[in-house]
Image (cartoon, rainbow, N blue to C red; front, top):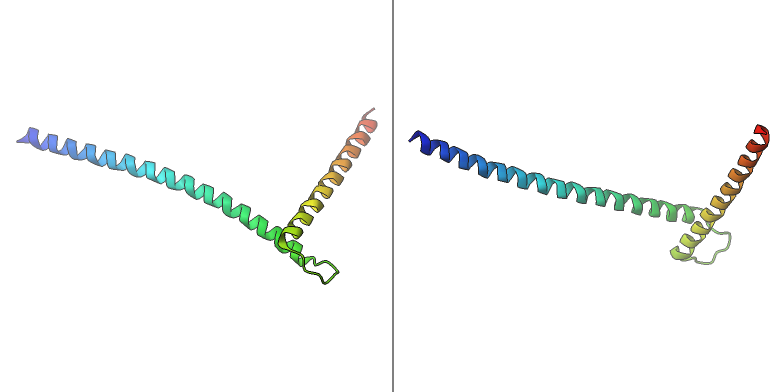
Length: 101
């Protein structure tokens, strides 16, 4: 009788352990999905912010400009600023080298 009860408890423990393992695996998958969704949301927010900032700085002309055009213009402006920053960094590095020598 005692042995039967021990076997019953052991089998119940094995079932609960398997359920726990399954729940942990499912939690891990859901956490990964949540992380992916957060990254996607951040990308969409930044894209929306960029489009909003482009819309805020309206062009002087009254003609309609598509969101795609505004997005391209923002990307070009960002590239111009990046190039300008690279040139400034290069100049700074040259000046620092001159100061050192």
